[in-house]
Image (cartoon, rainbow, N blue to C red; front, side, top):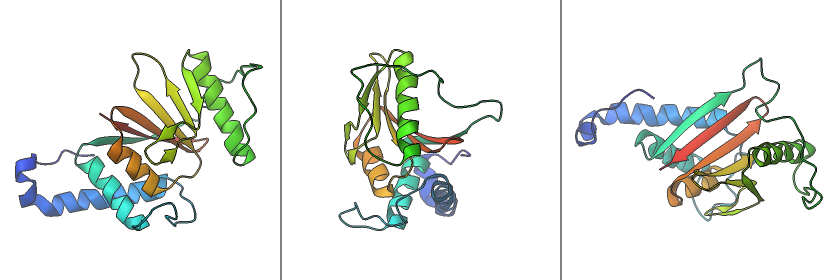
Length: 178
């Protein structure tokens, strides 16, 4: 994102701000898979409305967002060694890819010494995984599809965390809220 004028002068440059909001909306639309382009989990509102609200959070600097693409030299984003724990129950939701990806991510962070919680509560329901370690920013992870309503609600309500969307094996979308 290129630099914007100082907030006091933004009203004079509404056209620049509006252009940046539209650019962020396009990027979000192309980067994140949602459920059938509907926001059925939203009590009211529309997909484009939530997209715009997220874009405003990004343009205003309240949320930092970036796309991370996997280098062709990497086999995976995640450490590729399974942790066999007897007390680690089998995953029972989502498609095979969803379950396998959740397990890879869980094992990755467990190997690095983090506590991993399946389906932790967030403002907008539950995330797929929560990753925690004292002195580190809380990380919530969504694997596959999500909704823009859920994303917006969590970005709006929660503070000092990172929200990682894993749409596929080749890219990640990271949102950081201070």
